[in-house]
Length: 273
Image 1 (cartoon, rainbow, N blue to C red):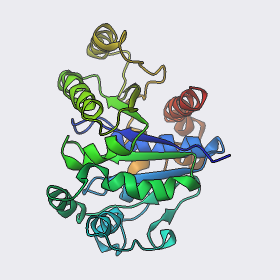
Image 2 (cartoon, one colour):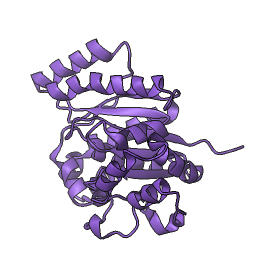
Image 3 (cartoon, rainbow, N blue to C red):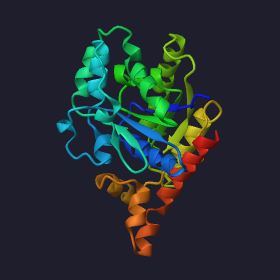
């Protein structure tokens, strides 16, 4: 029987909502559950690539940009091992600033919405999950991600403008399905990030999310806490679990364990559903 891979686009056109952090840590926790995971950095800023330990992504010779450019011009793709970077729990298709040129090239490309899908169809046979970290926009690169994905996960910080942008994303997903770009695309759920339950504003925005979207869209039980240590892990090119395991003092471990548990629960939610 052919191995079934689930491709998930992690997308919100609003920046600063924890897309990259959630992509990396979700991937790591899926790996801890025994799943083989490929992360795809589809943002020219290369933040996911840097989170994975590449401090100077612009010096990489082979990236997702290489694959997409060659695909656009119908050239042979390099071997997978020339492009993929390996971590303990995840593999990565890296990105750098060259991806901004790909966005321009896609405008006049044949079958422009499906360039990424054609590439990932060759890669995903080796994986259980492919997680695509999308740039904060709804231009051609995120559309490529939606065309390639089985499911969308929407990270949302409990802030007014982040919540307001969900409707625009919903409309884009409807267009992707309506225009037959990807009729099977489903919204897996809304992931609340930067969660501080003691703040009145957080609870108010959580209630708005549930009231406005809860009947239409699943809201994940897991909520990613707003902790300074989560940002520290990213700066150190570590998952939150790795950072937790490095600590030897109980107080330090307790400062990040809630984030570890939240991503673990999210990974289990995805696998079970």
